[in-house]
Length: 361
Image (cartoon, rainbow, N blue to C red; front, side, top):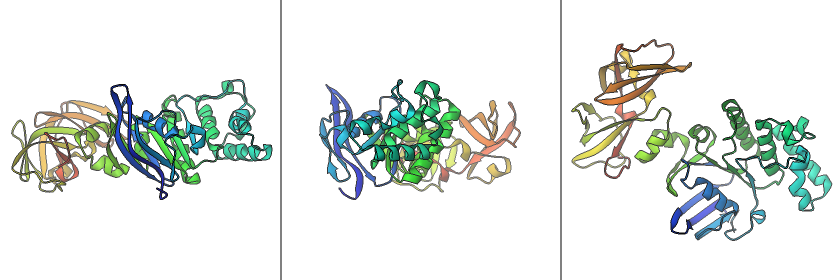
């Protein structure tokens, strides 16, 4: 176990008859940034709380730094945790909030001051040390909450949706700060979120969860471009991946309305035998327009239904083969509702899934 910072072996957690986590295995390397991603109720925060020792597991084992901590108290696991709520003591200054746990542990004042000053410098909250939480903005409070974990000088940091209470601008700013913090400290970090942008931008690897099971564990590029099943494909991406229902026969995918789409450029993971019910998924940004579209293996003329300018790019809605489709183009390309235009894509950049198993083909 020593080659991994955190190892989870056959972990299960039940609340009565409800199975929340089911036979999970997960190895996290030293210094890795892992994001647990999924919708509400998928088990991601529950898994984090099991690692932290805040919940007793029903079965399985948890190792941190090679040590079996399955039944250890949270304080003995060598972890620092940052919660969704800041959980700061309102009557204490920032400095006292940061040092509270160390003072309770009986640490010497010189060492406490050293750790508090180091955390304040890293998080750029030195001017705030004598303020109380009520005098701080949401972003500053979250920095203090991160600092409280930082002063513990541990190898593993756990983040439970730390940015979800902040507005969009602050979330973006603090996301950069957390990434910079990880690059500077090189500690192991496990981060829970339902926000795919946070996951894709922060993670070395993402664990996409559903119903207490990890559906796919991979780097962000693989998760986005080669989702392992329909669930991952539909969950990752905004706007969502366009899905065409149909039948796969050899190198031709035929949609339900009879449109034939050549898929000879697609690299199959598991080749389908004979005629198979399947789903072809295409990302909005992989649908091209005009002359670029005509050079694609599949192209067709469509009518634009809705246009949504986004600033740096433009989203548009149309129909291809009877399916509602979203595509993304550069904002320099001027398109308008009712316009007829040629669109096309290369299925080799898409994803094909079995309708029966929902797994990638």
